[in-house]
Each structure stands twice: as structure tokens, then as C-alpha cells.
Amino acid sequence: SEVFPNQEDCPGSDLLDFTASFARSFTDEFGAAIQGDISALAGSFLGIFVYLAVFLSACDPVHSMLGMSLVTIIIVGTSYIAALGLGAYFGLRNGALNNNIPFLLLGLGV
Image (cartoon, rainbow, N blue to C red):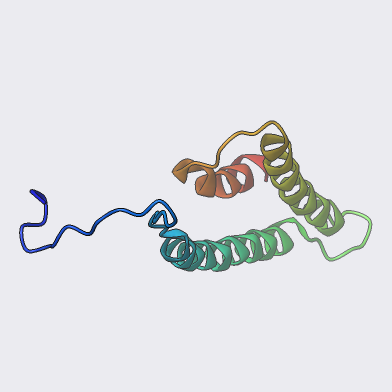
């Protein structure tokens, strides 16, 4: 073969058809990348929650906006999950930029 000069040509067979599949390698690589994103996303949600708890809480329960802060974070999370589900339903593929959407939603939503 011209691509691999030291490789011997194997005769074909009518009974056997070989197709290389690297799905396991892709799964391992993207799984590791997603695990890093999940920890960053959890840390960002925790950071936003601490920020909101410190700056929007008041000493009295009447004027405290801590509950509203928690609801805001829940809405941001559920809107992201709903958008992913809707995109999957319509057959849209996930791209590399989709990992940045939760951080953008947190910044704009809060």
C-alpha cells in the first residue's frame, strides 16, 4: 500500500468485512472533558449563590432577597436543561460553544 509502505496487503473476503470504530476512544476523551466542565459549572453555580446570599440578604426576613436569589438560580439551571432537551428533540448537534452557555446564562440571568 502507498500510505503504509511496510504493511502487507491482506486479501479480501466475501464472508468478513472489517470497519474500524474508534467510538470508545471518543467516549473516553469527551467523557474526561465533560467531567471537567461539570465541576466548573457546579463551582460557578455555588459562587453565584454565595455572591447572591452575601449581597442580597438583609438582616430582617421581610427585605431579604435570598429566596428570590435561589429561585433565580433554579430558573437559570432549568432553562439551560430545557434548551438542551429541546435542541436534542429537534436533532440539533452539540457544539464546542454549548459548554459556555451555562456561564453566559448565569452572568446574564443573575
